[in-house]
Amino acid sequence: MSTDRATTGSSTTQSALRIVWVYPDLLSTYGDRGNMLILARRADLRGFPVETIEVRSDEPVPTKADIYLLGGGEDGPQALAAQRLNTDRGLHKAVDQRAVVLCVCAGYQLLGASFSAKGAKHAGLDLLDITSDRGRTRAVGELVGDIDPELGLPTLTGFENHDAKPFARVTAGVGNDGATEGAWQGSVIGTYSHGPALSRNPALADLLIAWATGQDKLDPIDDTWPNRLRAERLGAVRVTVPRAARAPVAASR
Image 1 (cartoon, rainbow, N blue to C red):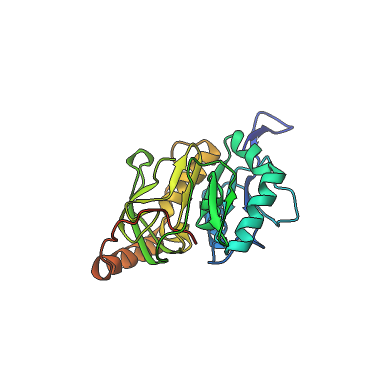
Image 2: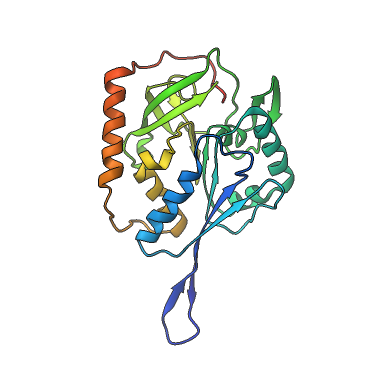
């Protein structure tokens, strides 16, 4: 997102905050489109002009957007998405230009160096310093974690369904391995948290917007309902979900 000089006077106008949803035809199993809607709404409430772009797998990924989103998917679509993104290279170029990326579940795994799908190892995009493999059992249920203090965010809450620096330390659920959840590197964040993730974690949405707009602090907005959702889900986890036992490898979708 940039600030462009208007053609008259000394006023300035903002270009739109461009949010790209990457390959919704392949990576959209668990309602992760909601992350795009939430980012657009929270930016609009603060007066930022917003443009949302849905890029299908037979289309080139634009290299000049501000925020890129990747969602969850099954083994076959995940492997195809990785192959096409590695051929396209548009997301790589965007990350090289410090674009912001939020990737969830299968989208998170394929941003690493390699991942397992359909009984084979596949090359990832190598945009996060991770590899992923199958766990002994499938991880399904509520996911809670204490986010890396360097990011200044409150507790992560989400729902996981899946067989760099850790993004969070797991306090309930499985995440990567029962101890850590997700990863972040530069302006790229990966998580196993569905929900969609940003509906339960509005502060994370605001961090992505702040990174994309270059603003240190965003104007406050009314988060009564998101905070009620967070409180309800975190309360349910504390009552019903014990802390997960550590697993030896990161689980896959």
